[in-house]
Image 1 (tube, rainbow, N blue to C red):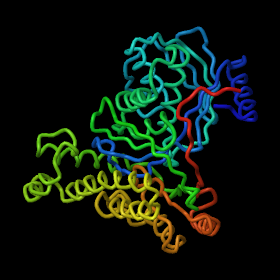
Image 2 (image 1 turned 45 degrees about the vertical axis):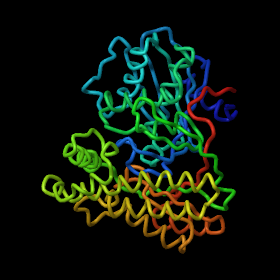
Image 3 (image 1 turned 135 degrees about the horizontal axis):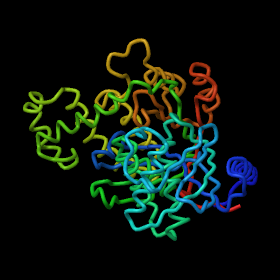
Image 4 (image 1 turned 120 degrees about the vertical axis):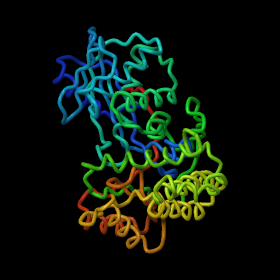
Length: 398
């Protein structure tokens, strides 16, 4: 991957200002968009996802010490001493936890991780719903793999390393979709049934060739105080699984789930059961979306995108946080999409939900009016027009 000259100059200047010398190598990892499979990855289901043309990039140089130093533009310097490769309680939910976790997993795999300096810039904005944390984890993994392990770890394995760092060191029980989409690149469908060997298949399709733009709309909602809402999704799935003695819902045949609903209602919340219904339907829908794209049936694909959005709203219920009346940002964003699309294209909840983003496929002839309408209500810059990026986590060259 070739690095843009202006970006390289900015990275060089930032690195020199931070560390007093010139960098030696450059690395890049993209953000990702979830196209199908809302909250299916952590139940080892199927997803359709793609890397996007927003990235986190780094200028890098080994520093000859046992300390990793990372400065991201606009943030304080992070320093991680590699003599401590166990989770640190004070680092939970912090960037150093991700760096330490990635380094620790490489060390477990036999890599002799040494210190390096990195200056990072990112167009994957935090809270944008495009998974800036996964891009950062994949970036750190790609750097360590390139500097100290001769590229021995595959990109899907780097995704697993990122998930490990986020689960064990950062303290977030995420699935594997975000990291895999960022690490592998392009558009892919992933089946997580075998958690150690997810099946990744390319899906070659050009939305622009069908006259549509891929847009992500930032609802403007505040993620603060919503940790319990996100955690409740996996907690309620676990309650369903416990009834069957299984780890994840994809291990429970759909007919057994429906046959047990009367019993489940005595042990679990009705919302948990509704979320179970979403899980089964959404998993089937991903496979139908992939098939539609592979045979070029874009209208069918759009219909399935709409179905996914309705299912997330009605069954998964990750649009309006419980009890929220004054602020229902995601619902407002969805309503605006429906209005400005005029019955065309498609739109859906994107990613975690509750306080994140909406995804829309917008016909080119409506794009200007759609973007203007969305931003007049939600603010300038709320509508991001994206494209799928071929490269995943890679070393970049000047």
